[in-house]
Amino acid sequence: MPSDRTAVVIGASMGGLLTARALSDSYPRILLVDRDDLPAEPAPRRGVPQGRQLHVMLARGRHALEELFPGLSQELTDSAVPLVDLHGRMSWFNDGYPMALRPSTELVAAGVSRPLLEHAVRARVAELPGVEFASGTEVLGLTATADRGRVTGVRLRDRDGAERTVAADLVVDSAGRASRTPLWLGELGYAPPEEERVQVDVTYVTRVYRHEPHHLDGLLGTLGNAVPGAPRAGLALVQENGLIAIGFSGMHGEQPPVDDDEMLTFAQTLTAPGIAEIVRSGAAVTDGVRMRFPASVRRRYERLRRFPAGYLVVADAMCSFNPIYGQGMTVAALEALLLRRLLAEGEPELSRRFFRGSSAVIDGPWSIAVGTDLRFPEVEGPRSLRVRFVNAYVHRLHIAATADPELGAAFLRVLNLLEPPTALLRPGTVLRVLRGFWRGGAATRPVAGRPGLAGDPVPPTVR
Ligand SMILES: Cc1cc2nc3c(=O)[nH]c(=O)nc-3n(C[C@H](O)[C@H](O)[C@H](O)COP(=O)(O)OP(=O)(O)OC[C@H]3O[C@@H](n4cnc5c(N)ncnc54)[C@H](O)[C@@H]3O)c2cc1C
Image 1 (cartoon, rainbow, N blue to C red):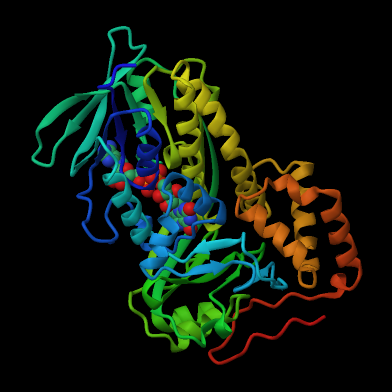
Image 2 (cartoon, helix red, strand yellow):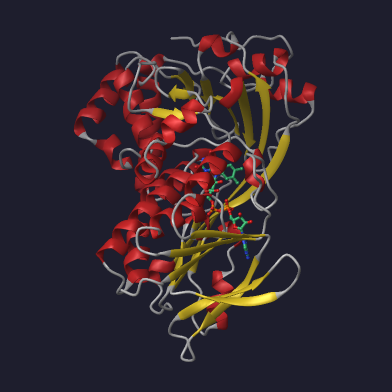
């Protein structure tokens, strides 16, 4: 293999950075192009508006990051990033049912803001030999061979408006949801990929407070999910430097507020009771920031019959998930591990092998996100018998998990992508769900989320 090979990565956000890491074992020169001026410090930026919203790196993603960047977890911990035992130090109100807690060493997430995580990963990537960043530079399109069978590079516009081309042996599109690959494929005479869209109309609001030891009764996080009829959810999680972020989300027209009083009223309607206390008494260090996410989108590149050589699409550009399940960065990291392995095996048919493999990576998280979203009557899509059965079953699992921490662990392992969704249907788990449900779980009533008044405590669970 010639030693002067160049790869160009479009977009230097999490997807692009992780891709660059995967490429660095095979490509001596990697150019990461981003139209933003990349900040020298951890800071939100224009091209990644979701960076101001609460992000969770799932346990599987943390492991994958560690595989790509050994020692990163420790480095983050050294930067005052807390590790959160998601089962032992976080309260869960799934469909309103409080999950029994149990200490865990495998279900551990890092409480890190999105800008700090991206900053730490970018610093690691910048240290890799042969990696160069072209920031403030927009990719305008692709260049290709005369027969258009192979992508040969990219057309760029620098921050001063000058246009130039850069030749590359491999180009990877990691430009996020707004990826222009479907359009660029058309320009080269290829069909665009089929696109699956699931309209969820999610609105997010995030606000960051100083973390006080009494918040959440000493726990480090809490979550109360949205349910049909009450499509609003709340999440709180500690972050670096003694902060705690709260995230509200609403679906299908529910608009979480950003104004102080309205935020408190909203928080009091959530099933996770501790969030209201943070809003009521916490010292806010940011304003509430709102962001809309209209639809989950999956582009089925693996189904295309023709695709140019020397070109790939990764991360959100291929599939962007309803963010309330916190999957995007973990999937991007798993795709990077896949790409690294496939490159080590050789490059013939790389795009076909990569799209097939990443489709398998995406299937599980996509089925969790879309399957759960289909509980809401407003979400359009086929509700197969399997989807309806699984949703009814998982609801019963949440009820039984109020008394059986083994079931809580099984659920969290799937949610954290440590195990496939089918793990919940193992005979031992099914038996525990049935036993727990009939042994009194059926009589358990959920914590009520309701339009509350200031100072009005949320009632405890009634058994
Ligand atoms: C509200 C919200 C909350 C989320 N919460 C979570 C969470 O809790 N956990 C989680 O894992 N994931 C979460 N995600 C998803 C996560 O943010 C993404 O999966 C992750 O950022 C990877 O995306 P990406 O790198 O593919 O694209 P992006 O992060 O969207 O980045 C695309 C990059 O490409 C650049 N770019 C675009 N076009 C061009 C061009 N033509 N030329 C040059 N540069 C270009 C942009 O400037 C940007 O830097 C959330 C998303 C949203 C919207």
